[in-house]
Length: 160
Image 1 (cartoon, rainbow, N blue to C red):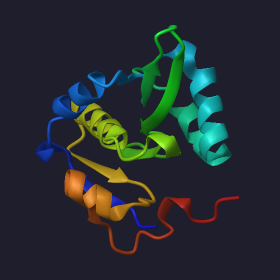
Image 2 (image 1 turned 90 degrees about the vertical axis):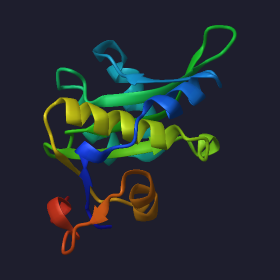
Image 3 (image 1 turned 90 degrees about the horizontal axis):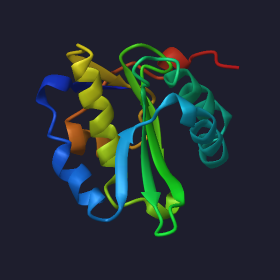
């Protein structure tokens, strides 16, 4: 999977999609350190150890480089629906990110992507790299990301 490049100074707004999800009872927000064990365990269960390792690193930043999608039940139970990280594998990289399979297609991934990329812009980055972008059509459509030629396997070369 190739890396992709995103212009952070030309991002669509995140507010409308976040507000639409809030109307459905889904909150998109930056995770906080006391949640690290729950978020990393959820990522491990849903997406495996490599992404859990990257998510763990995102919690080492201040502010935390991980955003979560959470739904709260009427009983007050909170369920993680998705996550998105930045500055995990490398500085200026977006990812990993994932949404629970049963919750896909609702805009959660788009909201997490935009939340992370806007946060990166606030940190002073002008561009971001989407590392090992799986759904390249999605990233091209949502944030006009372009494939970085010759980026496979890129930074992930020689992983054990």
